[in-house]
Image (cartoon, rainbow, N blue to C red; front, side):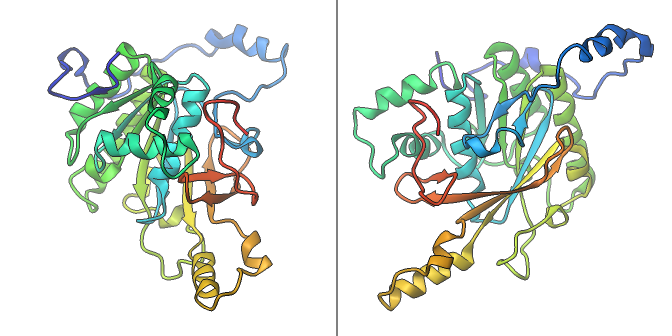
Length: 313
């Protein structure tokens, strides 16, 4: 099965259509039986999980929803999301990555390093890595700007033809005319929310945070670039914040030949901040520690990389 596809290799004509949500008006009694059934069973937490056990009761990725992954340039949001996609593969949740800034080989090279848990994976590891991804990861090979209409067709194709449950769009600015095209941003995100519902998949949209005056403080939803309607329309907002204060302290300690203080060592390298969770009650910060060799993010200060080819930690 082909893992990489492009506009040149696939015919998307059958998947072009207006992405506006259709108007469906029904009597409230239509849902009577479903409503009654809710009383017979306790509420269950559903949806794909993040790789870290501590998050499983708080953040999930359900079909028909959109999550905005935001962060400043260099915060590592795309790299962290690759870590998350490996987790989806391990959960048998097929994904498709549309990265308009990285080539497929670069995307796969980074993810293979994460899956191997080492800095330089052995040549023979590629077969194990491909076995993990087979039937569970596809990549849309398109760099640079993309026409929204084409992306909508790709999303439909991925959902209907490939059975994709998670569509990663990296990033918003490659799909609209510019940072000041607020109406274009609103229309595009509105179309993504409609497509997520229509195709019963989860769309993960990567976006940028405005440059903050104080980078030592995690951004909030008010710092997301562009139209405020972006945050209004999505179901979840996750902000990736890199602890540069800790990095500076580590560099200073290394310069003078001293170990990092216990206080600084215990601080997380990254915070994943849940700033919006429309269908869940929890909002808060998820501390993560960066394992430099594997490019992975660990869930505690022991900083042990996760084994995606075995059982997740």
